[in-house]
Length: 181
Image (cartoon, rainbow, N blue to C red):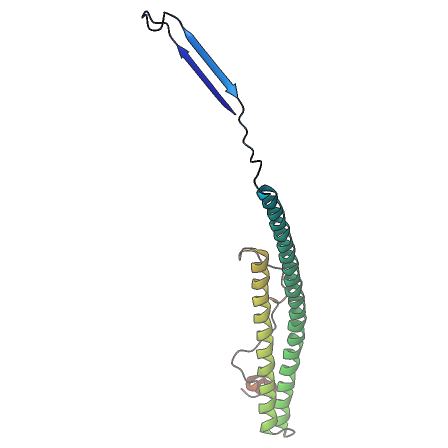
């Protein structure tokens, strides 16, 4: 679309004959290439194919994201169940360690049995802490995949921790139970 307007003021010279002249030109200009060899139609077809390919790519990424989130969610659920099992195992292992120590003091078990029970206890504690660490890593991975900030806290049940005796070998518990201090 184009427009052109010109206007002349009257002058008192003989060259312009003393007239005022006004001009206005309006119009629409369209250029069409008649022999473009189908270039425009090929461009439209190529653009529509690129659009379809990008839609398929977006759909594939959505499916991949959903699959990833489902896998992480299932891993979180399974890890929580594993943590609960390890809590029970830690308590059980601690009771076994204490009873083995008491049995040793009574002469029913050897020192090797006591050491094996202590080793089993600390191995169970290590597995429990490893499961808690894995849960934390999975929570971070889940939040990162969703794009959630680190300030957001996922509901957790693992913060109700089992009371683990740091650095103790079970000797003080057995000594207290046997009346020795």
